[in-house]
Amino acid sequence: MKRMLGWLGVTIVIAASVVQAADLPDIALAAPRMEGGKPLMQVLKARQSSRAFSEQKLTDQTIADLLWAAAGINRSDSGKRTAPSARDWQEVQVYAITEKGAYFYDAKANILRAVVPGDLRKLTGSQEFVAVAPLNLVYVADVSKMKDSKPEDQALYMGADSGFISQNVYLFCASEGLATVVRGSVERAALAKALMLSEHQRIVLAQTVGYPLPEKK
View 1 (cartoon, rainbow, N blue to C red):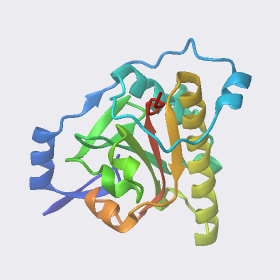
View 2: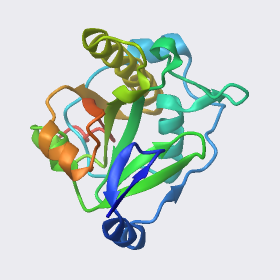
View 3: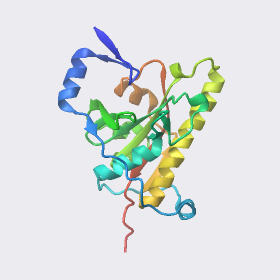
């Protein structure tokens, strides 16, 4: 017997979801800090891709700030986000993959919803650093939200909308002294199965985030 969780858009076996709830609780995120950070022009100058990451974990506050910058709600009256989306579909969902497990970013509740326990970081890419960095974000498009659109248009829009989110992450990381790189090389079939994605969900991109690896002296 199965049930559909609407906010995730995935089908989960009931027995499995009970185990997951016990093994991997949801994480209530702190309110994002709206002050501080570097000026925009300095951030644009510092923005870059990095493929060398420290194993140092991100703080809870940093994760909360990062996710809000990526795709948080910045207009509570309308529920609109920090990143634009075509026709305001908001079809791109952000999954956070950590050493402990996989979570779905519920922007409305400002909570990381537990999806599945266990370290899935290796599935988020083919490069070795994905299993070292503390956080891999996975951008998943729910095409069922893209009403009255052709498949070729869906591919264009979900790619562009994921890119907007990715750039928000880049700018946040540049401001906070973090390392990041967006990637198209993802073990899509294996990761989709591990995340129990529905037939309507498509993995678009992944993005690794962490502290830069200290330079050798």
